[in-house]
Image (cartoon, rainbow, N blue to C red):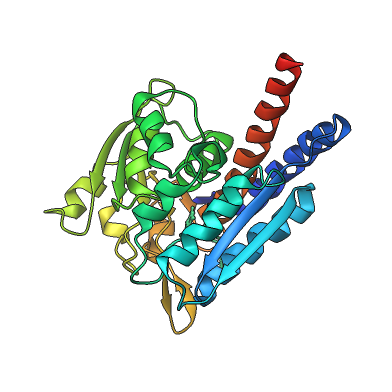
Length: 289
Ligand SMILES: Nc1nc2c(c(=O)[nH]1)N[C@@H](CN(C=O)c1ccc(C(=O)N[C@@H](CCC(=O)O)C(=O)O)cc1)CN2
């Protein structure tokens, strides 16, 4: 039997429907959440992601604050926009689209953000909260992966999960998220330098491929019935090429394709972080009135 598709597009649409109701409730109480984005440079993929994030906002009723800088911008230019977004009361939360052009230090920019407005959960304070397992905004792709597995009732507790890729937007925080007591998975964090990657992958109930190497995970590496989520993004001849080869569909129990799997969930979780931050701010206002 071919694998069940973990349909991130449909799941994200359902989540946007749920968020629309929460945004309407906030509006009725006089609050309008606003998402800010900062795009630096002219990478077409990044531009697509940012535009998609704003069209999602329009759909659920979140206000959009869109800032752009050219590829020639200096780190000081970027930090000036970050300071502006930190100070803007209409901006509930914001993101700096990654990667940034060469010469601009990502960690310097992320650290300059107000952690209370960090809609990506990538500020060191919020990543620290994830390590400490205390509440805070969670990184969008990892939490999107967990949400997608949950909604398709793919067991997480007790599962052996192999994550391939150690970047800050996916692999590293996903390991932290899945090993919390509430998720209770056992995680092996692999990367392209892992000795005998195939042996690790073959042992997994859930495989998350986020290495950015087209076709890295093939059918003979996958345990029959495993869930395989393709998060790798490369462009081959202008088209998205994921990390997971097509023949995996014949072996896996569930597959999150790329495109159409985790990407739309990343966007839905971003909106969720913004709505949650607005709800928390509104609750604080009531308490202090
Ligand atoms: N500040 C951030 N930068 C980046 C993040 C992030 O979470 N925060 N993650 C990725 C890119 N990303 C979010 O920004 C992202 C990736 C994919 C998608 C998506 O919807 N993809 C579609 C297809 C898109 C296409 O056709 O090109 C899909 O998978 O179906 C949204 C957001 C790196 N940067």
